[in-house]
Image (cartoon, rainbow, N blue to C red; front, side, top):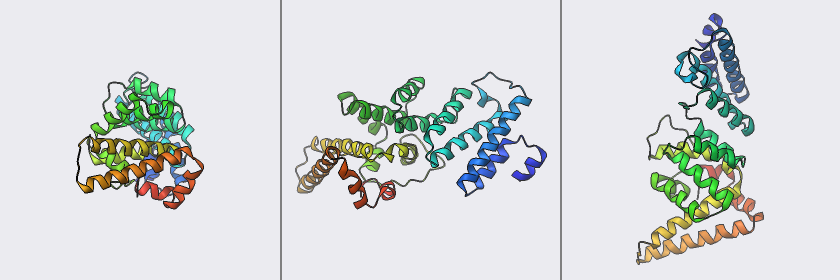
Amino acid sequence: MAKNALKISEHCAEAYNLLAEESKDIEKKLEYYKEGVWAGERFLIMREPSIPYGQYWHDVLLRSYLRSLEGYADTLVKMKNYKQAIGTYEHIIELNKNDNQGVRHKLVFLLIAEAMYDKAGKLLILFRDEESLFMYWAQFLIGLLEKGMTSKTKKDFEKAIRYNPYLIKFLTGLEDAVYDLPTHYFPRSKNEVKVMMTFFDPCLDDNTVFIKVLLVSFTFIRDLARGHNVDDKKSQEDDRLMSATIENLEDLLRNPEKIAEYFQEKGGFSEKKKKIVK
């Protein structure tokens, strides 16, 4: 069907999007999305948009072009070409300032992964009225990686996990962190965490970041449990195990050379993705 559509008009970006979605070859997928972008740009030259620059989503005929750009950027992320993906996501927001596609949620974590904290912070300011797990978690990460565990960073962490309590379960291994991307999600749901963790994934390329996040997570859940003043033996044993885990994570941060060895013992990065903590 897509190929037939292209025989009628080579400016049909949606046809290229369909071909890209069906392709199993990542290089071919990238090429199809690029063709979709070019088709959209040719269409823009031929037809003057009926709405102002920055509001392209409101023109139904331009949505396929915006989806081509998003698909192109998403594929670049899979290929770990983060810098080019960042530029593409930023361009999408220029064309669609309300960001109906939600690419800001992907962009903010790529900026953090590339240590572009100022840009990430400006993006949060741009969408400061949004209340979501994505933005709360990004705010926490920026503070943690720039300034360490300050009182503000701790508040940002608590804000994120209170917004969606499932997050702490994923981080501490109480819930399987399955890295598939749900087709939809509701706020404060398990699926929201799965989507956020998928977007957060590039930040975990640096194992030191991963250790820092785990350390904060385990410390929080231990301190929270202690605040309940539970005296039974099981709770005391859980506390000892949690404290031992925290001590181990602190030791890894003091001795970065041990981090690679730690993850080799755990089965490598792919195993880390399947479940955050074994």
